[in-house]
Image: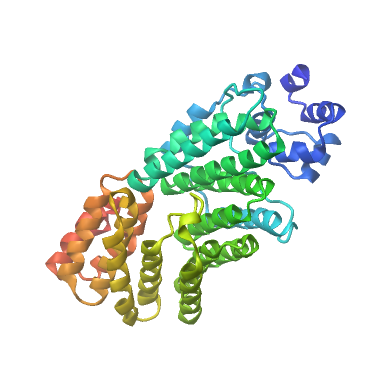
Length: 440
């Protein structure tokens, strides 16, 4: 095996694994490949791409040095945190399609959009893990995820992403440990949620490829853990990435796949979350009838949901978040369809802002930004500018690229009113804060 690894003859590696009772399906699950890819490699197809080799090493628990791959996770995090390589619009659309294919295969069990679903596995550094694990080990992963999620809500993804990735580097190794079936199933769910958080914090820091990779890993693990509600939550979060990238049509497709999983789970809260986000996608496309219909369903599902019994990954969606989504969807409609929708957006956003505590700083920033947009649209420029300044001041302490991106529509509205001194001052502050010097 060591000789095969040193020569990077992956076909020989896989044949040795098969000889010792490891199935093609198990190899595919570990390495993030399709069974057809594994089959082709077993037949002699060479693997040359560095990222694929690194993913195989990580999935099989092989120290990278055995394959001459010296680029470790700590270095990867530092490089990724600096900047991701720019991608063309066409490249990004291809990536979205591949993720959608992967999500469809996970959700409905068939390659609906094609078989090339892309590569999802991250490449964590190898840290020794116990040979046998119990429920206590899994609970430690769950506790770490809860603590890190709290940091993300309060201070932004940049405050904890590296810690999430580091936790994953150890957690992934636990998959190779001996455990009872019950422990294994719960471990799949715990690691799925940790990947879910890694994807969300990557998204918040502008690392979209990393987000996609982690969400892809999370989907597979959640399905192995038979947790349809978590599958729905992961797809909701990936859809939010596409909304952020102004790809509402692709976002809607991902949300609709998530809706299938939510309905299969029987969770009213999961269904409500997906409905609210589908409404946002329709609002971005200027379809007010569909947006309002789905918001109505989101309200109904939320009214039936038991928030107290919700798992950690969904518990954030409470009455404040429902109000925030109502306000957000109506803000979008006010910009895409008719300014009359500010009449619903303003009270909903005001209610949400008033209900958020100090632990939800980023959410308060988002809603202050939306509320500022509504007041500018209504002609209440001085108040709108004051709210915009509050959003900036709140966001200055956050390690979140997303908060800056969400302020760009506000910058656009402030720019259109530069003849007003309050709007002009706001535009200049926003331009400086977001790194957009168009207002200078």
